[in-house]
Length: 149
Image 1: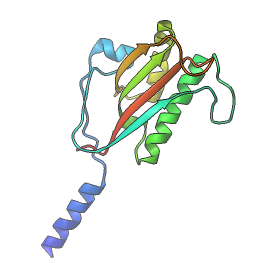
Image 2 (image 1 turned 120 degrees about the vertical axis):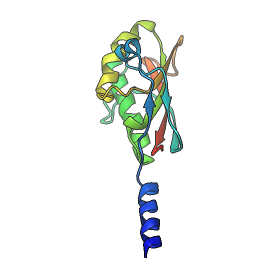
Image 3 (image 1 turned 90 degrees about the vertical axis):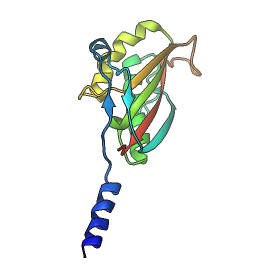
């Protein structure tokens, strides 16, 4: 009977996601909405393709609306990761492509909306000459780790 209890306990531990990420925080990075590094061990990795936000979920055009595009993108990343059993809190790194470096500052408070606990993903920002469609101001790809040990 004891062996059955140990097996049952092991199955519960293995089936429940363990969120034991180590966020290597730094004051300046926190003020900018990112973490210099996130340590994970194990877990299910989700590679999220670059998401764009030219149109929101209701079909409303977002061309030229930076804040609108950013929110649409973060919601899209969350939706992709949810399909794999996680959520935006499981995102450990993002790559942001901006058409103008001045857009980075307006992005910071939006990041805080999606990671209000301050456990921001690691982040790389790249300024590009243009993106695939007129009016597209940013694109963001992500990697999430669900249920790390």
